[in-house]
Image 1 (tube, one colour):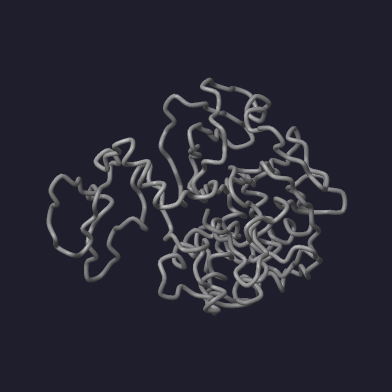
Image 2 (tube, rainbow, N blue to C red):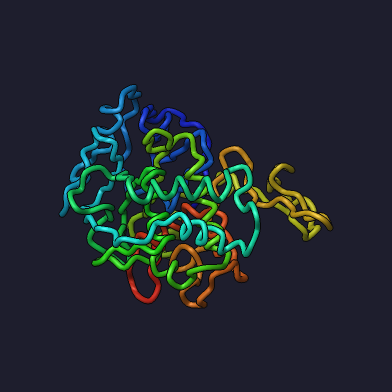
Length: 367
């Protein structure tokens, strides 16, 4: 499942942290939400243990709850949780250094404009190309969102397992500032010697144009305008997590039979988008605000539009997240639903591709 999750917690642990602008973390397979619409949630978060059923009102308490046994066993220095670095993982971590890239304002402006093919003001109210470029120049040259890593710059969960960096039951949390850092470095051509991420390979495959370049450039413009990143702020936390190894279909069937599981309790609803099938007996419809047919002159409303309170969006169940980009050499939307989600959720795409270096498909795998 990926998307913004905005439903309130019930009786689970609530964490209020000034680091994350009142990010709440709930137990029982874990839901994460913020007041902003920038949260990306990947996978089914069943890797974490249930959290205490009480409330924390300070950062130290919140961070202690996240520090499950062997939370960070770094092969390179990891920023202490009391510093501005908010990277967290239940895996060991490896630090890497970015290669240097030219950061003249002229080059930054050119790279930002290239995907939009001459459009004068591609970022609208987020700011002019000149404003975004000026912010990025300083950000790329001077920002250290991971804290003091010596001569290193960025942290990655380590080692690889099952073709990505999380493996079964793994999770990692980056701040939005850290995600903007990863995006900016990769977008302008920096590499991490010793770690050939899928994000860097996607940037090399699509160096100038295409829908993904537009999405990444727009994400960087949003980073430059994000008030939660002002004055060195880390912004909201973005969590990427994977479930443990999925049981076989037969195991699921046997368990459902033994426990007399009723599908009626699942709360499934149907959106009759354009079939005209009419109401289905004993099946609730999706509310009108989440399901409207497409008129002749505008898009309709379906699950990919979003907008329903508490809605999450799930990608198709392929072998990996993010679509068949490397298989098809695609730099645009293509014909697949998962490629479209990748374009419209660029934070998800950055993490799905950055967290794998496997060949030939460096993308997060399904559990």
